[in-house]
Amino acid sequence: MAARFLVIMAMGLAMATARPAMALETPAREAILIDFDTGAVLFEKEADRLTPPASMTKMMTAFLAFRALKDETLRLDDTVTVSEKAWRKGGSKMFIEVNSRVTVEDILRGIVVQSGNDAAIALAEAMDGSEAAFAQRMTEVAAEIGMTNTVFRNATGWPDPQHRTTVRDLAQLAAETIRRFPKYYPLYQETSFTYNKIRQGNRNPLLYKNMGADGLKTGHTRAAGYGLAASVKRGERRLILVVNGLASVRQRASEAERLLEWGFRTFDNYDLFKKDEPVEKAAVWLGTADSVPLVLAQDLRLTLPRRVWRKIKLTAVYEGPVTTPIRRGQELGQLRISGPGMPVINRPLLAGRDVDQLGVIKRIGAAISFLVWGE
Image (tube, rainbow, N blue to C red):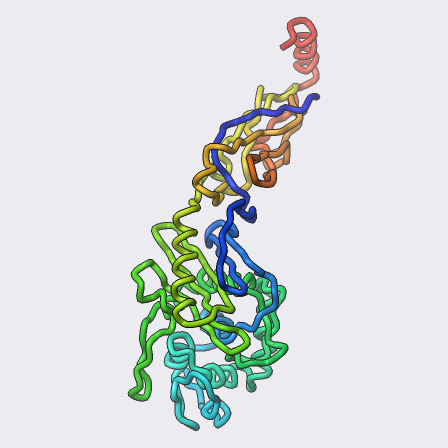
């Protein structure tokens, strides 16, 4: 048998995790921009450096509440009793009163919209008995969803030398929130909430720019600088951006908008093949069929810079003709994706159907035909 290399077509592709070969600078200390659908990293800067998340922490506080609501171990009309610790906490506040009872629905708006430290502590104490126990569970759940470099020490983002994450982990948290909780995620796009006769606006500057933003959370401490985890959806595309370490509220707003606009303008998503759609047909040796379709296990959608779309080629690589018997789903080769300025990508090519071996008499006849006629 000989290796077959069949160039299928020339078109632009990029690996979901490929780094674009183009210069882009940002004053953010850490930054990452990803495509929600494909997971492609469009831009990153110090994305794995440990950084204080400040109030972006509250995305995980809300995540645990959303999960409990989905599991029906918590209800929106349940009430939370406000402790003196929660009431006294400084920083941004929902302005809940000590010993009062507040619904989970209001507490969540106090966390998501108003970024209330008091609300976050009240919820943590209600769910796990203490903020420390809740923070430990936050860290455990973070690891479960792929936030491999994150440790939480509180529910608010209050400064603590051990309370650290990365912008990559925060982007993962944002994506998982959107993916898992479509019923509750819309809380993040509410622009204001009034509680105790005090109206507060959402601090996310992108919600007011008519650019498709629908979340998520700002953060600021002296050590963290100004940060933002943002999500913008336009048509079928959604980008997630996390920046931290910016110098001011104004710079946070302008830089976040600039990076997101760059991402939408520079990249696009391209559908190549559907699951089980034939990529190529491989010749079969001594089988009940002359060929077998080579297919992919999953839809192939990739994100790439628009300018390289027509410079990339796909190559089906397999040993052919393929010997029988062949079983559907059997790996027979690789789809190789290559092009200038990008690493080679390989995706398994699978048999799209069963092909049995010919019986003894027919195999002998086929072998004689091959020897005589070369077919």
